[in-house]
Amino acid sequence: MYRHCYQRPAIVSTQSFAMTRLTPQTLPLPLALADRLGSVVHRVAEQVTTAHQAARSRRALARLEPHRLDDIGVSESARARELARPFWNV
Image (cartoon, rainbow, N blue to C red; front, side, top):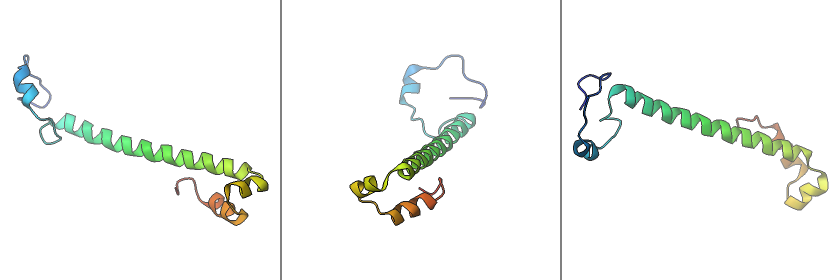
């Protein structure tokens, strides 16, 4: 379909394009790299979001009063262990 990885054909038949299965192996090199880079960026964004949520939850846990800890069934020692964990340790 592409003669050169940076040059697109002037006219693309919709029938041949519709029947082409787009996978990383069939994409031209720049698009395949963009697809993989997008996947990596997506995974990193998910990990950052998860770490941020864990840090926010731990800050909320740190603000809880002892009688509230009893309400949710968390001991002081369990809270101390959770608060000692680094933010990236989810």
